[in-house]
Image 1 (cartoon, rainbow, N blue to C red):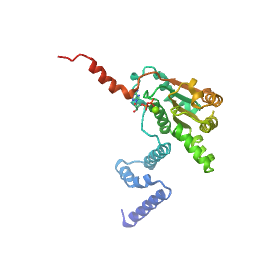
Image 2: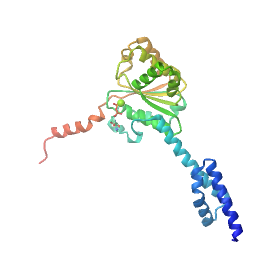
Image 3: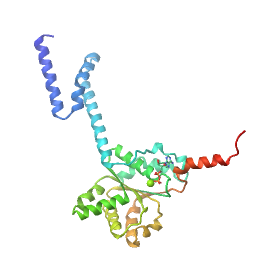
Image 4: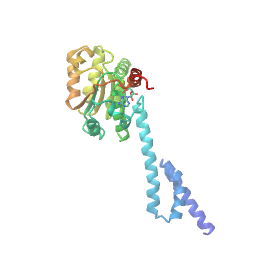
Length: 265
Ligand code: ADP
Ligand code: MG
């Protein structure tokens, strides 16, 4: 190659790198030199080089966006459905979770209500569904019921409740954990009602509670508000009632069982 041709090629290469960087395609810019080396070695066509380069850029963008969605959603722990031992909790119908993991409930804006005593995996399952939806590209948000109420109430006092409300109404899936652990006063019940009714038929709620529906009147200190919230939540919903032993206690229980067995000689 003559010096002149090489200079031209180098210049075109430089310009292409700059175009890519200017357009924000930083992965493609970084990958350009190795992609051209591969193209020369494997005699790839221009279309193949471009496809390879943009596939890498697309993958990097996908990963960056997922990271952003996960940061926004701020799940307190990373839990997944494959990590859940359904054998330990026979009262849960696996088929229901097989269906939920298709995320059709998100598309259909249905709710998922997970009820049961402490330690049976409600939070684990709720986070798993939320993370699965986030990985599929949906915007999601995690909150406990008491944090939801506290943040709306304090935003209200500062005069920006409607902006805060969008945090809870915007995402395709809102995970509300631990409803019912603490009884709510009228103001708190009002905020839960606002969120539930604004999301009604617009976006899914995945909710966990240690209280059965019949106790919700007590939880909200108001039968009428409790009925109005339940009516909207249950209209399109999958309800999972978990009746089992606490997973947190299983090691403890295994130890007790061992101690009860006669020693082997
Ligand atoms: P809950 O919200 O019902 O009180 P958690 O979801 O917080 O219960 O579960 C307590 C702990 O036990 C968590 O670390 C969770 O990941 C784990 N866990 C609960 N049930 C199971 C299960 N069936 N398989 C695997 N881990 C479980
Ligand atoms: Mg929990």
